[in-house]
Amino acid sequence: MTYSFKKFESTKGRYENRITVTGSRSFGFPTKFYKDNKLSKYKYVVIFYDLDIPSVGFLFNNNDDEQHKFSLIKSTQGYGASVVATSFFKKHDLDPQKFKGRYDWKKVKTEFGTLFVIDLDKGQNSPAPEKASSA
Image (cartoon, rainbow, N blue to C red; front, top):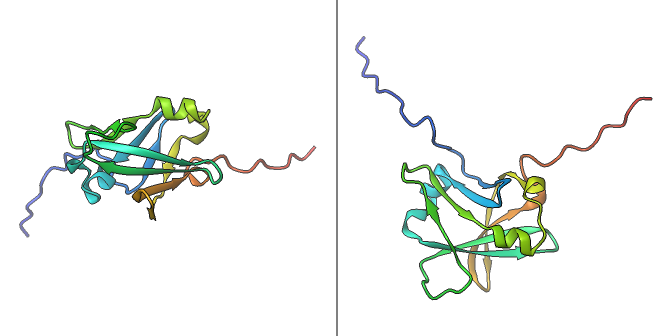
């Protein structure tokens, strides 16, 4: 039998289709999300927030005239993108350590356009319920 092996060299890529919240006040868009949603064609992201749920919505665009946009920081190695949103976290008094983790997303049509939405109470790293102690 003849094999035609190729060396796997994409060890640093994150191949999941979720959005991340980091402890350093950033949102991350891993490789799979980045590629599946063609983020390479966008320069900016506008962030929306629903205080009641709480949830965050992202609108990717190229509108240079948008005053409330964040620059999309793209990995030069092709590992996705991120946005540093310090002002967003501080304005809404959100502790990034509390919300850091990976989030499933959904597309939601709004008056602003179609947003990619994450519900902050449904992250992978949400704290587990405390167990009753047996005293």
